[in-house]
Amino acid sequence: MTATGMPHRAGFGAGVGRVFRARETGILIAFLAVTAIATGVNPTFVFSTDGWRNLLLTPTLLILLAIGEAMVIITRNVDLSVGSIFGLSAWTCGQVYLAFPHAPIVVIFIVGIVCGALLGLVNGLIVTIAKVPALVVTLGTLYIYRGIAVLWAGSNLIDPDNLPSDFQSLGHTSIWIIPKLTIIAVVVAVIAGWALRNLRAGREMYAIGSDPAAATLYGLRTRRRVLTAFILSGALAGLTGVLFLSYNAGASSQSGSGYELLAVAAAVVGGVAIFGGSGTILGAVIGALLLNTISNALPVVGIPDVWQQAITGALIIAAIILDRVLLLRSTRKLVIAEEASHV
Image (cartoon, rainbow, N blue to C red; front, side, top):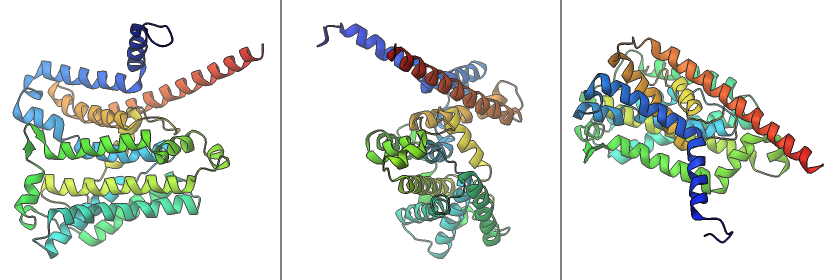
């Protein structure tokens, strides 16, 4: 018995019910279903060294981008420039190795993260100070940052000969059976999820996304929180650029192209409401896993991978419709409860 006189089993049942009603649970079930179907058709999809490794390793870049994107979307904004930040950061890190071939790996990580954070800072300043919609700002910087990369890189490439072997091995080695890049992504996800849930700054981001006007009236530091979200998104895109450079042992002016929409899709499909104010880092991570697994599974089950974009688009629309339905349902319940209280 509990202090309230209710048996522990009731509390356990309520907890189980909440788990199965959570958006993340539905996305996780979808991910497991896709994985099971592909494995049933071709057991090496999971039950092989390459299959298991690809299942864990290939979503890493998208997971990191989705985490940063989720933070921005929670504040009722969006960052469409993460793919370009990712690419420009990767190229910058490659140029550092060209100039300083024996630079420590930690220095390359710092360069990539700082480069991304500065580009995110530019986005955030324009959004928060100039009051320009984030969609417009980041659509513009998507092309600006990509243009800088093209002007800087031209048709040149960073190839394996330009990168130290220990830096390249980071992208392909494991600790036990877990790729090192996957471990980095998991650590980032745990830290980001904990911060959003437990720190005041994280809780204020949710409040701002739920009702920006009310958050301002309440005295929350809306400008600082939104700016922080863009800086963190840029920093994670910069980190993604470093990991991409290591994993692919190279970079070009087009590195990261197209990832911006996948990052938005992963966050939204994972339950981060496009209208802001709700969602979790865990959901964004599972969303990234689902989209990546669908991409890998389509050829295995005999469906042309050109259908990936159509499936991704359908998932985004379904997620937005579900968010709208849930919002209307919760609003209706509040109205009914308020009317009942006046009876």
